[in-house]
Image 1: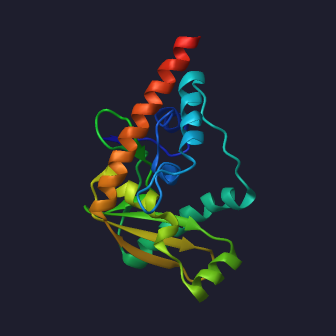
Image 2: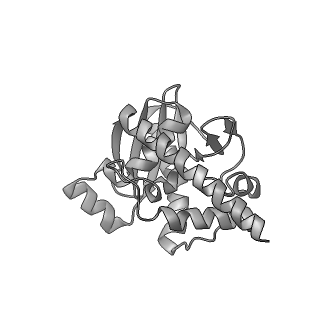
Length: 201
């Protein structure tokens, strides 16, 4: 189920309020399919969003803000170089229940997607020299595929004036199954915590 809105807009923030999103799935499950030690903290953040009606204010460094600008340039570079359209959407829910979802950087064709990671020059150089592992963003990328039903994803490390790095990642059905179980369990507990807090008021 797709919510068509601009990412970062007030509507987008409202849609995601209290909803586990792929960019934070690493706080729920590890790359090995085990529970993350960060799960409780993330759950409390989402419960707070539901109770207060306000999104969590995550710290954004200059590099992170600049990365948003680079994301636009990276998407254009990818479209021009591969002569494809990268479709932008607001938020993709796993199903009609709207329990969890993802905000992809773009969809490619009928089966693919794109995840863009902006990098500072020295980081991009390190990645060019020594490699860049898709496991760095495994839960997010597989979570995008789980929520969208798509089969493959491109992970792109981008820094202006340096060569980009593009990795092809196939859907891992075994991990996606583990991720879905973890997300359903997480959401069940999140609902219980939220209901308990509302009952205390």
